[in-house]
Image 1: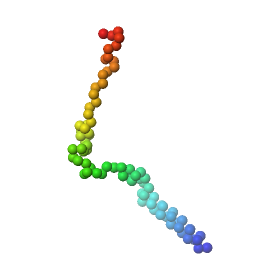
Image 2: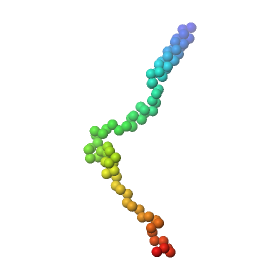
Image 3: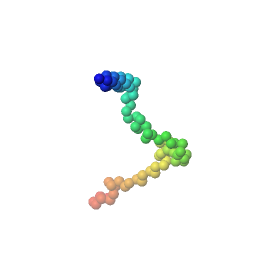
Image 4: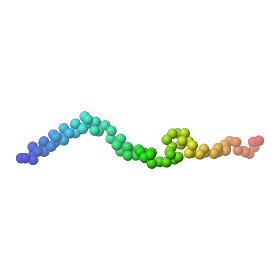
Length: 80
């Protein structure tokens, strides 16, 4: 006889707490916290000469690809 009212009170409290959490935005961003751990926050530990903060810096580090010969310009039989 005691367990039924106790369980009804617990169910009502659970529904109240869930509705409170939804109203306060607890379930608005489900993926943000999971992705936040992947953000790089150790810029202070990277040496100055190795940092690539701007696209110009990144472009300096990557070598330009060599020009490949155009297959249409190669010597073809029957063409001068």
